Every structure is written in C-alpha cells, then in structure tokens.
Amino acid sequence: MLRMFNTVTLKTVSCRSSNAMRMNFVQPNRGIVLAAAVTATLVDLIGGRQATMANAMERGELHNKNVDYETEKEERMQRRINSLKNTRPMTPNYEGHIPLYTTEKALLFAISGLRSFFHPENGLNIVQLGEATAWPIFLESMKRTMLSDPTGRRILRERPNVTTQQLEMDHLAEYPKGSFGYQFYTWCKRENVSPDTRAPVSYIDDPLHAYIFKRYRQCHDFYHALNDMPIVIEGEITVKALEAANMGVPMATLGAILAPLRLKPVQRKRLYDIYLPWAIRTGLTCKPLINVYWEEVLSMDCNDLRKELGIVLPPDLRNVRAERKEKIRELNLKYKKLKEESTNL
Image (cartoon, rainbow, N blue to C red; front, side):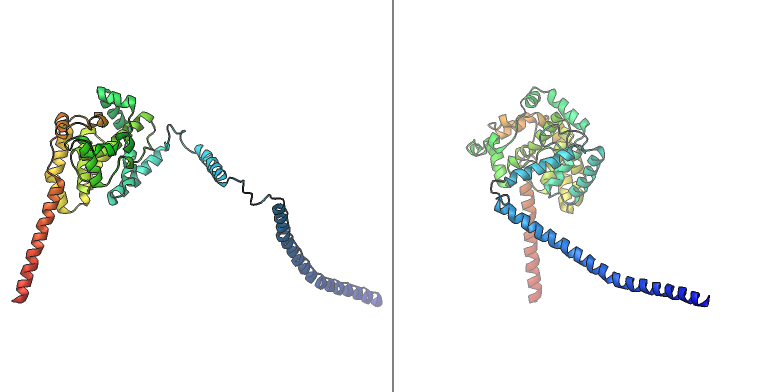
C-alpha cells in the first residue's frame, strides 16, 4: 500500500512538474507568435498598400489630371448644405436668406447688441443688430407707409437696387454743383464710401419685408448726404435719431438712446444740445424718407429737395468739431507759452 501511494504521489508530482515546464515553455512562444503576427500585419498593410498604389499609378488611376477637384469640393459642400437644410425651421425664402429659430433670433439680438455697444466701429455688429430688431410689426408699419403713398407703391412694385452701376456714380460728377446728385457724389468721395458697401439682408423671413429693410439700409447714405452729415460717431447717432423719429426703426432708436452713453462729455453735450433735438424734430415733421425715390431726384437742386421734404440743415458738424479743435490748439499754445515764461523766471 505504501509503495502504491508513493507511486501515485510521484506520478502526480511528475505531471505537475511537466505541466509547469510546458507552461513555461509555451508563454514565450505566444509572445513571439503575437509579435510576429503584428509585424506581418503591418508589413502587409504598408507593403501591400504601397504595392496597390504602385500598380494603380502604372495603370494611370492616380494623380489623374482630368479630375476636377473644384467640382468635387463644391459637391461636398453642397452635400453638407443639403444635410444642414433639415435642421433649419424653414427653407430659404429668397437668395441669401438664413432662417432662424426664435431662440436663435433672441441670441442674435443679445450678442449683436452687446457688440454694437462696445464696438460700434464694426459695421457687421450694426448690420446684425438691425435685422435682429427688425420685427414684423415694425416692417408691416413701414409697408403700410409705403403703400399709402404713390411713390412708395411704385418703389415696392419696381424694387430698385441702389448700386454704383445703377446710379452711374461717375456720371454724377458731371451734375450741377448745387444738385443732389453732385452732393451725393462729393459726399461719398469725401467719406470714402460706396453704395455697394451695404450688406444684403439675411435674417428677415418675409421676402417683401426683407426688401423694405434692404431699401431702408441702402438709402442710409442718402440721408447722410442730404444733411451733409459726416461718418463719425456723432454723425451716425444723429442720422439714426432722424431715422428713428421718421420711420420708427427699432435699431436706430436703440442707437440714439444708448450710443451717446459711450461718448466723451463734450461730444455728448453737443449731441444733446444741438443734433439730437434737430434730428427728432426734423424726423417727426418731414415727409417719410422711405417714400423718396432717390434715384429720380438726383438732378434736383439740394435746397429745393430739402424744402420739398421739410428739412432744414443743422449746424455743420465738421465746422463745429474743427472750431473746438482749433480752440484746444490755441489753449495748448497759451499754456505752453505761460509754462515757458514761468520757467524763464
């Protein structure tokens, strides 16, 4: 019995020892096999792809000069645009229209409002704020104003577009010097602007409303030129106040109220004392400026046009600013002279 037990024990120990030896022998083999498999796979991927590309190049299938990459790029972009269309609240109603959800319009209003307040020199901020505040109730009011006037109805029917080509700007230089056409031409040259610089409308949904707002936007420079108002912050605020009083433009109203808060005290005083009262009084009493077919009054005498519209010019803002600058220069010279005399003493 003891011999049989010892025999079984020896066999068991022998088997365990054999298994342990087999496990120790297999483990390094698995690592070698795994490394070899990874290496073979990488070689096949790299070498195989290179071989495939080489064969394709021999067949002339790569670097084909006949491939229209621009067309492919446009097709990819069009596919992306088509995929995004389903995320919009509606299909575009006119060329350049960008439909927005109500929440997006509110966000556009908030962001453009803040940017316009802190960076009014950036025209894009003003453009976006203008459309974000161009509410349907305001645009409907503008439409009724235009429909109530024969010239306004004709503008809506013909839908003129204010561009350099349509106005024949170079030809305006040959107009009589007292004409509105010549006034507009010289004003554009002095301020270095062009009728083509006005941004298109994008965020207003109704096509007719979009045109009305576009017309208002394109005629902004006519208001500047007719009143000889320069493109400086004070001049812009004055014209905005005129538009607010005359047409009820929400963005213009916000600009006339909030923009002066960021001016220097002397500029703000000048606005409050002279130009804002003039703009509000003139806007409330003159004819609706949106109903003026400006393209057809270019040959009129400026004074006659102002009289017909009920506009009286304000003090020349350029001269007022120049006079103050000259006074400051004279005071500085006096101060410098007094300082030099006191030093000599």
